[in-house]
Length: 225
Length: 225
Image (cartoon, rainbow over all chains, first blue to last red; front, side, top):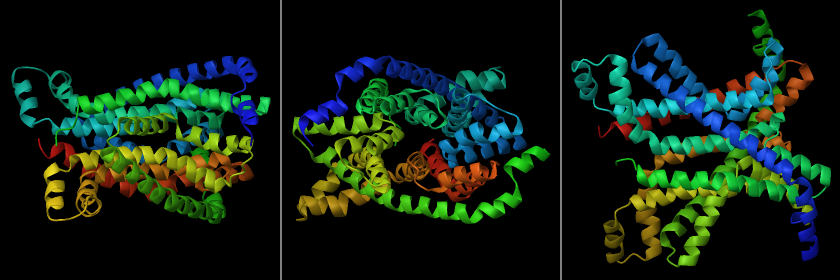
C-alpha cells in the first residue's frame, strides 16, 4: 500500500469538501440527542430515587425492577424493541424518539441506583433534624438530603452520563442520521474512506472535552475511601 | 393485552426460535470469552504503564491514547475497523475486527480502573517489598497488582458487565450473536417475539451481576456513613 493511495482513500480533500455539511449535520444531531438524553435520564433517575426514599413497598418494588431490568439488558436491545417491536402493537416512533427514549430509560436506571446509594449514605439524623425544624418531607429531601447525596454521586454519575452520550451512536442501527450513520452512508456513496475519518474527527471534537470533564470531576469530587 | 401476548410473548414462536437463539447465545458467550480476557490483559498493561512511565512524552502519548479511545464510541471503532480496513487493502475477518475494536476501547477503560487501583496501594507496600529483596517486577506482580485488583473489584465487575452488553454491537457487522439472530428471526416470522426473548435471555444472564454490583456499591458508599 503506497502513501499516495493512503492519502487518496483516507485524507481526500475533494471528498472532505463534498461531504463536510453531512458530517456537521450529523454532529448536530449527536449533540442534541446526547444533551436531551443526559437531562431526561438524570432528572428521571433522581426523581425515582427520591420516590424510593418514601419507602412505600409496592412503589419501591417497581422502581427496583425497572432499574435492574434496564441495567441488565443491553441498550441496543432496548432500542430494537422500541423501534422494531412496538410498531406491532400500534406504537410507532421515529428513530430519534426511539433512541432518545431507550437511552434515557437506561440512564435513568443507572442514575436512580447511583442517587439512591447517595441518599442512603446521608446519615439519618440529617433528615430527622430537618424534619424537626418544621420542614416537610419533600423540603427536607430536596434541600437537605439530596444536596449532600449529590456531592458523593457527581463522579460516578458523570461517568455514566458520558458512557450514555457515546451510545447515541447506536441510533445509526435504526437509521438515525447522527454522525456515525452520516459518515457511513457518505462512505458508501463516495466509495472512499475519508468520510469515516471525518466522522471520527467529529466524534473526537464532541467527546474529548466530555471525557476531560469526566477526568476533572473524578479528581475534584473523589469518593471518600 | 391479547396483542402484546401475541407479538411479544408468543410461546409458539419462542419454542420455534429457541434453538437459533441458543446458538446466538453461544456466540455471545464465545465473543465475551475472547474480548474480556483481551481487554483485561491490555488494560492491565496500560494501567501499569500509567503508573510506571516517567518520561513526559511517554506519559503524554499514553494519556492521548486513553482519551482518544475513551472518546470514540465503540460502535464507531468497530465500523471504522471493519469497513475502513478494506481501503488499506486488508480484509479482516469479522471476529478479528470485533476483537481489535473492543480491545482499543476496553484497554482504555480497564486501564483507567487498574491505574486507580495501583494508585490506591500505599507506597509503603512497594518499599517494604523492595527492601525484602524482591525485584520491581516481582513487587508489581506479587504485591501491588493483587492489592490493586482487590481495591477496584466493583469497578472491574461493572466494566465487565458493560463489555458483555457491548457484544451486541457486533450485530452491526453481521456477527451472528444473540441480538443478530433474534433480529433475523424477527424478519423471518414477521413477529418481534424473538427480540423480546433475546432481551429475556440477556436479563437472565446479567441480572445476577447487576444485583451483586448494587450490593457492592452500597457497601462502598454507605460503609463509611
